[in-house]
Image (cartoon, rainbow, N blue to C red; front, top):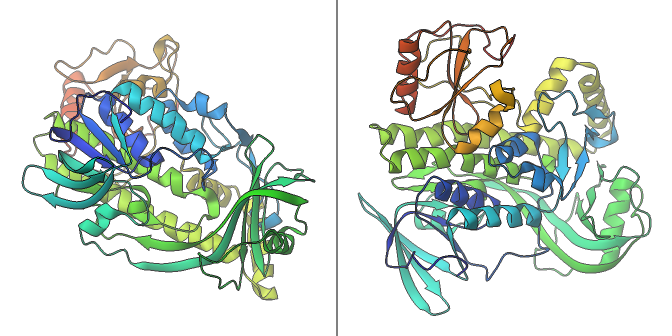
Length: 506
């Protein structure tokens, strides 16, 4: 046990989160920061210092971490990459992204976990390491988890449970949910090695007709190598040799960069799978427990963290009694995040298949596609928006009039008083931004800020706690603004037609 003693196993907590990876840690921290009692259950004795698969933290994830005041700490642990080279082709600049973080941050997953663990503990979440969930039972009011601990079996009861326990999720299995899909990458080799000749571009990645390889530094002289032979059929339990890794890497990169002195080697496979339902009663699934896909694009951890950001404020609103229609609000988690999980699954699958094309015609088509991305700004913006997460949004709620900005990501614009929007979101609640002089709607539980003096817009905008637009209106009077705020807090569509003008443009 790593936190306060007040969450005894027999007590009913607001939320039990199963799985202390990045997704579970962010979710637990959000819920505890909202004043809820949270127990985070993890089967490992403690977080692993070096065992990590994810390295890429994309722009949208950094924005969400910025809204929690921890993005800059994470950025300080890694290295920024401001351009991508698809399959060794032309470089695509990330500098065109409209964000405070126009880059990919390369940092080991354990750095993200350490940061989120500190935050979760500081906000009051209780973390139970070396606890293994073995069963789950729910009724109309609570969910009970059967747990094995070093001291014997215990039960933990919660008003809601979230399974963030990975691809082999015990929570998902206890719900008897299918996890349809298939293995797409077999015999992938992972290793931590030293290099005699480090890559010139910091990050080395490429796919050939026969192999794919990625070499990325930890920052302490060690490098993580990930290599996949196209026709590999070895089982995950088969031993791995350094010469095998060198051979695959040379086939993909043209060099093995002088790999030597491995400290750890392993083999695994990657699936493409997605659960059909992210919610079953009082139980939710997020991260790899809900969707898993190839490592191409580095989208897995980022998608899970964005799942958590979407779910946390909805659970908090319901548990605090702020929504008279809690079922609709909780159902919106699946409605919004399931299509994103499907999109990411397809995108990462397309990337890995494109990387491994073998016949000359398809390889020529791949080269033409990379060149087209470099020349076509709209295509480039769509591709970078998907990978970075900046271009991902949600459909407007049913009944919303079109055209609408509802569901769009809100950019981090300056507010009056020198504040940024994502700094204002650190309260964990809704943020209303109006022109100067507009009063705060009476009785509205939100943070009210104004546009800076001189900004040429009369729009009022309501931003959700996860940084997406809930509602916007041009020339809205105080009554309409207050009405829209109340309706969105209750998860209902705004009662008047929205204006088509983009409120974030001058």
